[in-house]
Picture 1: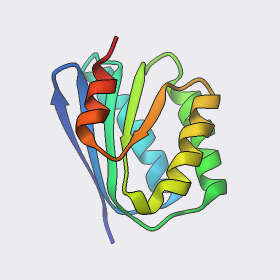
Picture 2: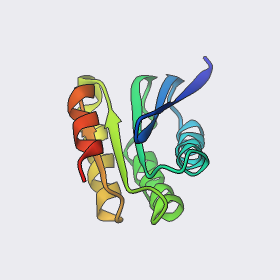
Picture 3: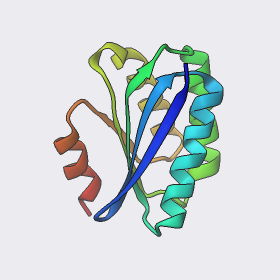
Picture 4: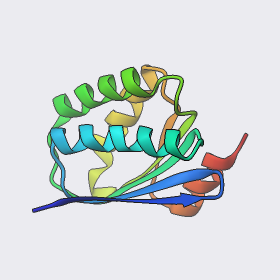
Amino acid sequence: MSYIIATEVEQGYVKLVVSGEQTLENNKELVLRVLEACVENNVGRALVDISGLLGQPGILSDYELANIAAKEALGLVKKVALLYRQESHEYTSFFETTTRNRGINLLAFLDEKEAVKWLLEV
């Protein structure tokens, strides 16, 4: 199964919509694409919709990904709103906490309107 990342530029943030199989390698690519999109569009906010991802690489992969995201994004990205499916709540919650503990202002949401509202708050 392929892994697809679609990027859109919105007013004040970039939106990345991801679908396909979730693996650690694919998730690493996503982190880099979020950074690229923010830098290229001179915005520090990103909405990342992972609700179309299938599979779960596991807690250890999420922990490693949080470390990578913090190392790469710290200082470049002001806020990240993560949209996810309820079925992945346990993993997403762990990733959210682990990432926030490393200094990234990331919150996970089930509702896009709430995510955008938080993302655009000063």
